[in-house]
Length: 415
Image (cartoon, rainbow, N blue to C red; front, side, top):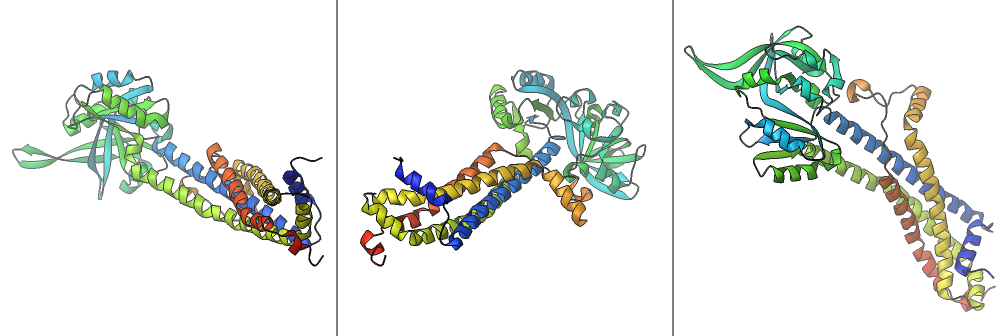
């Protein structure tokens, strides 16, 4: 009357009242344990994705998606390079730049930094530095005015503000009748920016491209051409295609090349954190083994009767596989729903906890953010859900095998 038999009996065992209430309690604990593990996994992975996205966006606030450089550091035909690069369908912006190491000095304070020369009219086509300005404007940089825009932390180290003079010293020597002298130039602070990453806020100074070329004695040449793409994740492939189309005349880099080790470390951190937290699900899944073992012992007579009436050992085995898989599926489903709800509302949840206990999880002065970021990715949710269910299914095999080997005569001897 009911087909298939294993599915029907397995589901009946799952929802039926048991003589041994301890078995019901263990079943509940195993289900809730799996749900809790899935909730924690989805939430933590989403928060880590949020942090990674936040860091990536801040890096791309100053670093372009692609970079075409001359092999000798002097690109004289940069206008041709811009035209050739712009022909690629994924390139939506290009701008030349001059870059070099320098020392910045103000009174008794001296520190090193990267001096980047940009064209204010074209720079917004490749990076969003204008969106990170906290004082002044990028358009305040004018050729021949020798003005500089500093990162907020760099300005604090030098002790300067708008209108102050900063001496920029480049590691090159100028030979004069008085002897060899380092090349230096005084710049006026015209603006401040804050990206939220110390690498840029502490180590980058922006000047006009012509002023930087004069300082570096490049003449009409530049260091390279920076590019912006319509899809940041296609940067590596586009870099290879541009390198082929430019026939080896230039070196083509992408944004991952600048921070390869950093992003590799973030990826490894996420992978290891996910693996460690998955052991929460593993521990909870072991409760399924306990539940089914006790269930097999409790249902010895039922198993014997089923086999006596013609049920095959395989059908009996599948009964307990269905029961364990059902517990795992329910726990996984509850965990996915709870994990998504928590991950999508983590900001308000953290704010409520902070207000209730009077604590602060994230200090904006340290982390440059005032809220806990979260980025729910379908791939992570799918991997957690599938992994949790398959693990639950795997844990049913040993108890189900014990039911498979049950002998009816032995089970009914003392009944």
